[in-house]
Length: 235
Length: 227
Image (cartoon, rainbow over the protein chains, first blue to last red):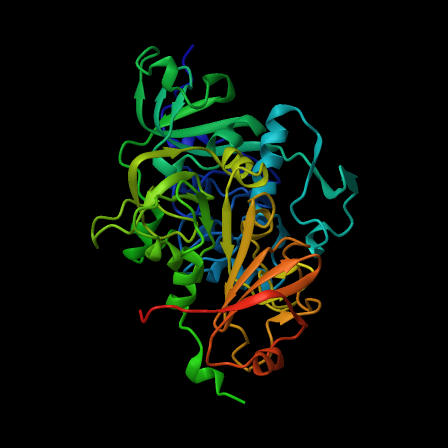
């Protein structure tokens, strides 16, 4: 078994128009910038993007929006230091927004990966974000029913991957990665280092390789924050 | 009526007062922005462990400029450091800590707080780009949900009200409010005044409050150091 694939272009080569794509990261932390840029090079359109945010600056997800690839974004916080790309597209009506509380977004993705079609959460009960959703009372308290969230693809950044797809993340770059790996039909991971099976202590595996389909080495991955400090533009 | 602009506490002083109620050994989430300031005034000899939604327990202050690691940030996307004993975890575990009632205290900012404990702090209405982040999750689950806020808005309108007029973050969730003039508990659907600045009369405080301030025992002076 060897899930490694030659380069980032090959890793994303089959993502078609209209696909739903989960993209790991919280702001720049854990953002798989090189996979996103490879997807921009390929240029599928009409995508639904699932991420905590909606891009920052002129790179990564913001550059996907600028390239006109994104039809809809499902996120909790579409604001950033430099939110121009999303803000302009949203106010011009070119992009649809599904705003989801952050913990609900995480749990919907987890549920999608875990085979749980719906669950009840106290979050958003009594607020406008619960409008139209079924509610129920359990032990005297109100809860909102939320549906699972799955995707055709996930793009995730890890620190170490072995050839079987077992993953270790880097610091708080972990965030949505383990959840998105579970919830996508095809999970594509960029890793700073690829090692042989057995090189990761089984006690330290965070995402078991079963949830991962493709692994590509990106040894000198850039941080979104550093690129933005440099004023980088990806187009 | 006293000029409240001259007597009111600074944000740092409000944060200091809120920090006095954080007990040793507490697990605490501080909302992004103003609430983050509470960590600066942790009481000497007490250890609180701070949680951030993006998957860290026991993070510390910002690193020296140039030492930032952009995989080590807080929910406000600011670079942080780690304390000995820190832990990383994914987002579903992070919000299990929140909703599951495992945090002792959450401290949030507010546009409005109502006497029934409703909080509005995520949206000022329809225009622009809406963003909620973790606010609606954080108001559920912490054993104590406290708000720190100026007592009135920049235009002088009360922020403590009978019912919120702005979109709600959560219903019946707030238990204590630390303002620039007073400390107010929310009990049984009403505001109960616990502390107020000595320089403001009860009548003047009530005049800048949008709902009845009830008394339940003595009201202490709100005493905060110069900061």
